[in-house]
Length: 95
Image (cartoon, rainbow, N blue to C red; front, side):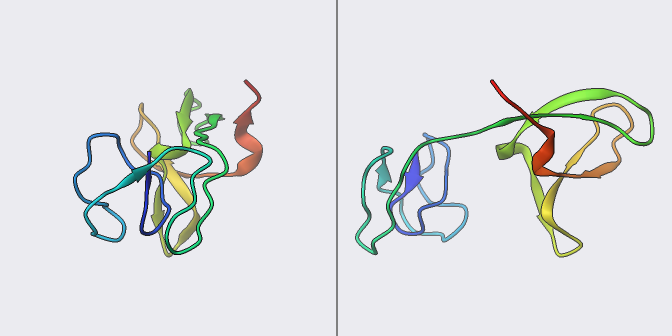
């Protein structure tokens, strides 16, 4: 689902948006919010990466990404060695 106020993707069971803090009125894909945000599709692509530290190969989805000022495109933690790895769009697996 998507927040009707800010348009960001949120969990189906959220009562308040974790991004904007407003009470959630969720929208299905294709809906248009009051502030003009048009939800085109609900997508959560799959990514596959090999850890540069321990060489563990693992998959993650965009909902697992974290963001910090030093990782503006996002990062994910390796499940094996727990080190943060930069996210790159070219890691996407075409499903």
